[in-house]
Length: 97
Length: 385
Image 1 (cartoon, rainbow over the protein chains, first blue to last red):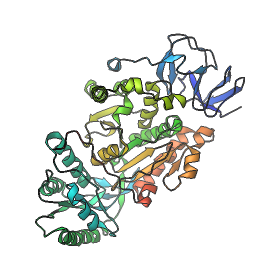
Image 2 (cartoon, each protein chain N blue to C red):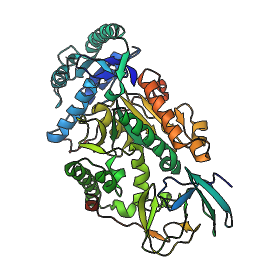
Image 3 (spheres, helix red, strand yellow):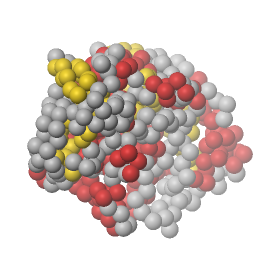
Image 4 (cartoon, each protein chain N blue to C red):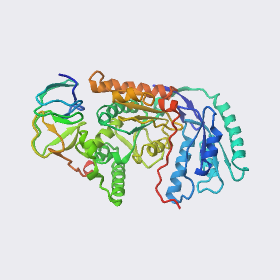
């Protein structure tokens, strides 16, 4: 199945569902030269994210090629990635300088 | 690369050729409206400020009015005052005349009242319109274009496709030597370090951080914590997890170029390339600040839809929500929803937006212009006395 989800940047370790995708669905998501084949263990609503690979607890969750937060528990490939397993990393603004 | 624009006496180039009537105070707004009524090519600013303003707040109102008058999309200006306002018509007109542009001022109290002021104002505007009609478009290098970027009425398609596609177009314009303004500071919070990291100098990066910190403090001082309240329950239900994610979706529209400069509200960029302007997220105040700073064209991304437009600058409306494009076609110019269906790449969508920017800069009208949208609102920073 194609085009039900989108990867924004090649650095991303999550994809975003463009429509509600049911548990058990296997997706093939293309981004430039990269193709990710992934089976979702749980249903992911439209606009929500799921992991493209295993993301360990404490690792950055990357979307738009940038960290959007930190995984608070291990997130398995295809797993719904949201407020229950990601927190804001509250990066200090000065770290950017 | 070039667009077809109007060369002005101060060397700048415009995408439009308006004769602009500026009420320097809210009390002269109706006369400004009456002066321009049914005169094609004439526009007025629906300004409600200019009275009871002091200090930096007064200066900001004056700077915005002067910025609109000196914007190269304007051929000539008439400033209409009442006669006792805190932002006098004479002062605004004198500041605009430094650009070499044709400008006159008139005051209602010393001109025998609203009707006489309207009649003499219309005589001047008619004469200017006749002269403006003789101005011709000529090829202008794209490096003279200042593009304002903005998002509002966003939904999840904004961060996924319309903002990234606009980012591609921003990069193309900057590659051609042009200038792109990123603003709406409160929507940078959580991603300000990314913009700051792209700054050319430490000082420019610091200004971005200071600007976002100021807005956070404003919220805290009024008992709100932006980072706790954001993302909102509606954002979370829609799939946005953290404030960083929300802000990243917003800043994507500025592309990937280094940040050259950080400027306060309604100031003109002094450098080309990517420029950050500190503005509110209020759609019309932000738009007004960028146009006052010299933007001759704006691209506005939306997911839920908005008719917003400027009195003097074309505003191209862009969406990645195909349903919105179908239902609000009278307000939306460009549809990039095929990016989310996988049938158009971001690169191709960005190229299409870039081409639309050049076409509109060269005279093609936008939906907001056809609707007659002339939204104008100055960001106030002081108590009115």
